[in-house]
Image (spheres, rainbow, N blue to C red):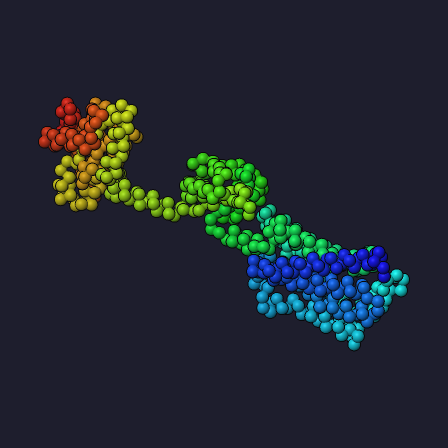
Length: 533
């Protein structure tokens, strides 16, 4: 056999294929801790190298005994490659629980029997009935007559490889586009040898020689390309995906153009318009309804490690949810900006609790209006605003006449109901801009922005009449209630809130001593009420 013959050239390609397999096995050994399936890749490529080099020596042999010897060497590796690849694929798609113990070792029963059948074939002829040199070949090439176990081995190997493709296809339909490059690489690493084996069985290969050992070099090259270009197996991508999908927080991955490249199921639950069709669309195109704060508008800063946060109220149907939105730069291994990750953290329960606590801190528990502290804070803000805008502002203080007698005669529960009764009347009679608060036990305060004292007096008079003419019913008995009012207006820019309320309290005191059920304005001391008998 000369070096320029087709067979010798083929042997050179087979040897190169074996070398690639060895190099990939070394790489997998050095990185076996990065991914649970890396050990399977190491054994797959190592056994491929054994098979490939054994086949190269088989082609270079001149006698049948030598050929038989190297065939035995080939079968140390070849029967085990397909089941080990299946283990690799199972690791990749997250079926790790099926790759340990008896479940994993069961895959190697048929390959082990195949190896024993090959090395003992001279005694039983079950793997190949006969083995002979091809008569019309320029170089020694062996042909075989298959035996029964040859077909068992071929069926098992083909079935295992189809199982690999099935798992990849099933998982690929659910996998985000970011992993498709890896999935295609692994599928090709199965399809190429499978197609070569089928061509050999059908007699379609050049020189009638098995092309699979050479094709294994192509699959090794594909693995090398995918490892260094798509991060295949260096850090388990499917493990990342499982973590990604199991996160309770919604996560989106955007590119530099603000296009959606990936998202998890939690994000899809938050934003119903996040479907597979949303991949490649701009975030603002799917971030439309329900956000009271407007469209999502995080920019892509050129500075590294920049984070942004904002709170978002999101309305879906009749339910309201609150999210803390956190955006972070996504960097390439070389430090260049690649895009942005958006994390949506559900803080609904926390926010609603804060609202409840704020409500309890601000609202009077009995009457459901502002308590004194909150009324003072908000009134001071309105007073400062009125000074800046040079707008009038008036205050009303009023309390229930003879409230102690109501409590003593009818009980405190009726007294509480009387306060609620008066608050309901005030809510209906006060303008929407008015601020109403419980100032004391049976005393109430009203802040009226943009209101002159005369207009405030008219409002107070309407309230006084409505309270006096609307009895409260308790146990089918009508109870008449009246209230006395005191009013004042902020006249100078430097007047303090406490001074205004003191003036309104003085006017209220005068209403009380003037006969009750009256409205008294501080500056005019004008009485607008007639005692209701």
